[in-house]
Length: 339
Ligand SMILES: [Zn+2]
Image (cartoon, rainbow, N blue to C red):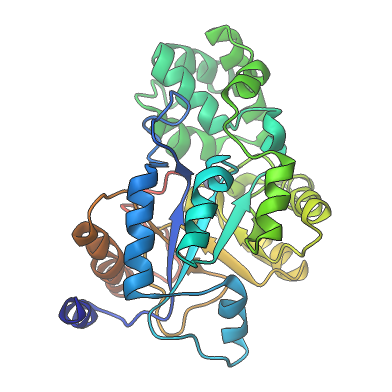
């Protein structure tokens, strides 16, 4: 293994900080997540924790932030993170992290706590899996007419439709989708119990998980107005802080794309004293990594060999490609980021 790390280092920029993002850790998929590339089985997750604890030095977000003020990170530092408010993080992932002494940061959406409503992505996923794309296209037609239609996959909803909808249009789309599919999303949410309860979130914070902001209702940020930033970013921070009684000082971009990180949002986060912003474009964070642009590897492989390849080889090649062919912070198009 040491020789493989040496070989990977020859490929591209040296890593200052590796970050990895997980979502839902479950034995069996459900129609709410199937096809979204967010599920990892407990066995796969434990194998990755074992691999990370053997070959890396897991660090806390606090270590990453203090590195900014001159405290060096240990060699092969890795930060484990979770996005979205899945209950499985508290039920399965957190106990496994404790077993392997791996600290982690959790980025949540307060709107979904206690399963009061379904995240838009899980709702679209459920309809696509259970009823196909017809109700989704009918709902899209309500807000977009025939433009950009037909949508052929749920992926296109997340990557092509959601980025061009305002928050009000997304609400109209979701309301129309509930009518077209003849389902009650609130009832589905209560039955599915996909997300954390408030009590579980408080428990995660009490056990040392860093809690960060992932917007209130999991929105694509590129079209947010100033008022919507208050509603989605500030409200989420305020509710998470009120529950955990700890400061929320980091932000994870929903859908992981730097294309959603507008100058207005960056100014807002800096003014609100955030200290780190995370993306999911699976690009290596080099020696001069910007804490307001930390990238994470979104992993979905099973074996150690392929995990090594995802962690050490591909992020360096993408960093090299971005350095050679793209302006800084340009969106990465082939590192698929589910959420
Ligand atoms: Zn997300």
